Image (tube, rainbow, N blue to C red; front, side, top):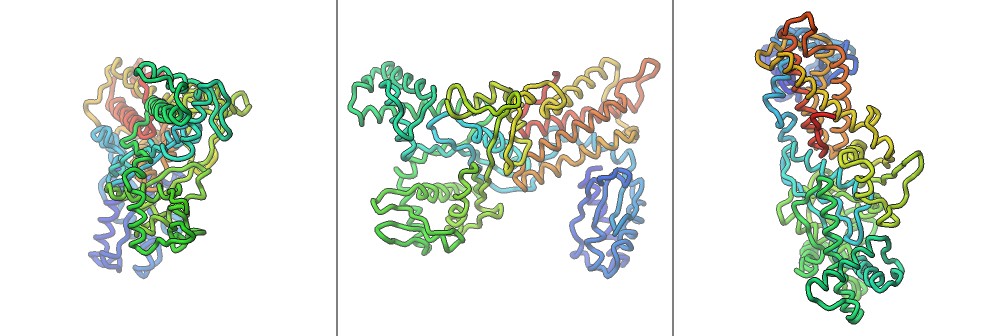
Length: 558
């Protein structure tokens, strides 16, 4: 019996009690019934607080109402015991057969177990969006892992997700990048506020080689402005190619790479400003054009067209948001680093100026992530060999591998600063969270293989044979997976999946130590062995489903 099935059973018990007058409320006043796993397993398998929710409307006290629910529930098939505790909680213990049916449910559902339609709608999820002026740094790597996992989680909960990368190929940063490439090609130091690191030399040399291969003039023989344009166009393409390749190797792919330049070249910036002007939120002052964002809670109004006629940086944000919404996104989620915290107010104000709802997980939502620090041998890791001043995606993957990197970046809430111990993440011990979870999956496969060698098969299934307390505990954790997925998607918190997987791995390792799937030397194969193979394989499936949601492999052996 799944938690959803138990909730439906309690709902039917309440509906009958209302129908025969035992509970004095109307049917439409009944709350949605939810069950939760008690912290103290001595209290039962599941508990509900529905009696406390409904008692006041019913004109009675929670314990009396809970007694009505418990007495009726105890007569139903699959319920071993229902009692009232505390101020009115109804504690429920399932019959072994009803609890064990979950293993069949999981295996029948396969990869679909845990998926639902709890967050329907179309979502445009923008993440990473690092400027193509250098390799992806550690903060961007965190967003790559978390963003991709969030996309997977939202899809599992029923959303249609477009993964989008905003390609910042417009503005002063690109100018400084091309100037740095040209200076390095000439053997000169990068200009003030330019870019350094060995990757600048690499890109500069590849630009020159690319021109030669294409039969184009050596850019170093061209006038400065022409040379800089060559380094800009070729250098940005090369750098962005490296970024895309690194993300692909990290298991992160995007549906859309959106070029900022396109907003300015297509007239989208001016059109978006005119849309807001028609809505009464744009005015002209001191030769500049402003959006009156203070109407919507911003601390000051924002310039979109400067007095010299050039577009302010915020103008691109305005046009880009409108473009996303016009492409059909119900929800726009933008993931930004901690240094962008000051942008949130103006972005939410802008969305509201377009008539949208912002900041309430509706039309626009901005997630802010905190920094990541690396430690090795107890000391901070501060410098990349290639990038010079930053730690890159490639640095982290080289140190610990893709799986450990992704899992470690996803398993903590993004609103907390994260410190990663490279020595721990590279270790093959149970202290390493990703190893602990992956080892549990590999162990389930080893158990299944060993079972086959001993003649244990998943043929007849008697769920009532899952009568050991460890069976019940493992089933209880497996039952929670769909709710964890739904909550993780609703709250935009993929770290809930990682923490759940660690709980499941712990329950499985305990179960492995207390029960047997294969017979002892003096035993024949019995229905208990077969039933536990079902439970073992159900655990395999849930571990694999969960690891897939965080973009981590589920190894057959370790």
